[in-house]
Length: 342
Image 1: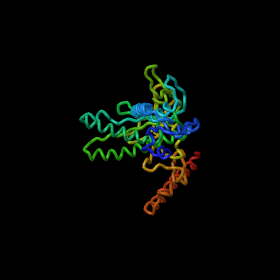
Image 2 (image 1 turned 120 degrees about the vertical axis):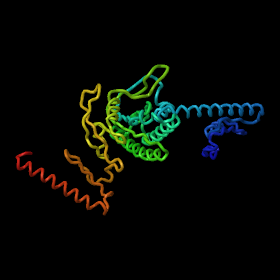
Image 3 (image 1 turned 135 degrees about the horizontal axis):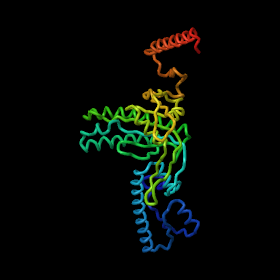
């Protein structure tokens, strides 16, 4: 029995004990080992056949339910699916307020890029795009909210969270992985004859949102709403193709691992404050605290030293550039000292 239960190929086979052991303790022990039924002597053939038939029918129903469950899982984010089937989340209208990191993306000039495509080509490109990006999202633990046309909405921080900072880091790491994969896909699509392969823009924002089940008694949607979600979409719309645009709230949480350049501030409908925007740099080689020996960011200076990437081929150029930077700073300080400036 132990061997059957430990083997994935035989674990689901219904087992019925036919035994001369009639003690209740023996029966309990057999059922605890995984037996589906327990029949004692004297054996009644009709009873055995009936019990076997019952187990076969029950097994068939379980297989049907398993198949339906697997199909249903494709319509839900993995985290939401597990929460429901593990009994951690009720299927009722309810929401809570949490600090989340919101990811929003779409395809730059989607209409123009696809206007001359045949339906079969468009279906292939979109399905390939969504499949690849969704696999990356699942790898990094994103909650996939929805697909809207060519756009994707995801978030980190619910129903599972590693903490606000780690959620933000995972989201940006995911965004980088997606853009790097998009570069590979673009090359693949060009080789297949697609002249204008998709180019993705990404916006990321961190803030308090309402997250939970929204809808009616008949139909629910597990989603996130609020001004911070709209801000992520606004950042994406103002981002560059193949790039990642972050709000200050997100960048402040990830700046130890990633370098970004501040861009012109934005105004967003429904948000009174001016939105500071940061465009992610060096996506091919994110700077991590694990390897960076020195990383400093000042007004007018961003310095990140990663010794692992320095080679004999680039060391001389690095020293030359650093020397030039030092001269520039010394010149500025001399000019300010002469003019009495601070």
